Image 1: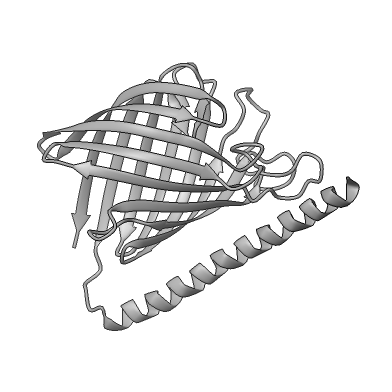
Image 2: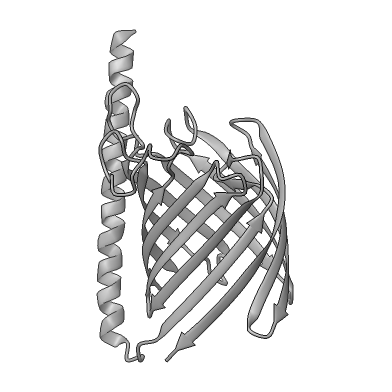
Amino acid sequence: MPRNNTFAANLIKVLKKLLTGLFLFVITGFSLLASETEAVSDAKPSISLFAYGELVSTHVWRGGKSGNVPAFEPMLELSRNDFTLGSWAAVTFDGLYRELDLYLTYSVGDFTLGLYDYYCPPAEPGVADFSTFSGPDTYHLYSFDAVYQGSAKLPVKLTASVMMYGMDVDAESGDANFSTYLEAVYVKKWEHWSAGATLGFTTHQGIYANKAAMVHTELNVKRRFNYKEISIPVFAKTIYNPYADKFYLLGGVAFQLSHRWN
């Protein structure tokens, strides 16, 4: 039995190294593609601002619910050509759940690479400092995401997200879990309506589950209203986490505004 445990532990370490190598390979490929794109592109730089605010009945992310009351979730993005710098936040109406995320993404064609910093402090004041970026007292999670945005030939958005650093650690060994989340999203759009389906899977034990498991399945519908330059989406979602056997029904309304400078 101990030999089996040792073999399993070594196998997991090898898989984690292979996964890290795969993502480094993807980064290299994107760098080469970006160099080719810059060489043939003569487009003028453009800057765009995107603001978004959402009122949602319950905060659910990747199959996990945070809080039992409605939440406000604002987002702000500033983009220049293929680079985007953004911030996303969430706070429940009772103040028991708070989150602040910062991210930087780079897009080439239908693909996007992103670095994310998720900061989720506990509800108790004074327990966590934002400036504690590492160590056992940090409440930051750092992830690397690779996203295929979909195309006319393959209208499915595919995401691979790996937690690379931060509070995602094994409780016994203290080693990083490298929690990995894979997601596929399909959306069908009409003039003012859209409907979508999502499947989310984690590859091994980590922050999402204690084993490889399907953790997020979702069906949603959205109706978009417009007032001058403001877009007002109203949406409803049904979410089921097969691993935790949890079902959520939620809805919300959002306010969206964007502006571009050429």
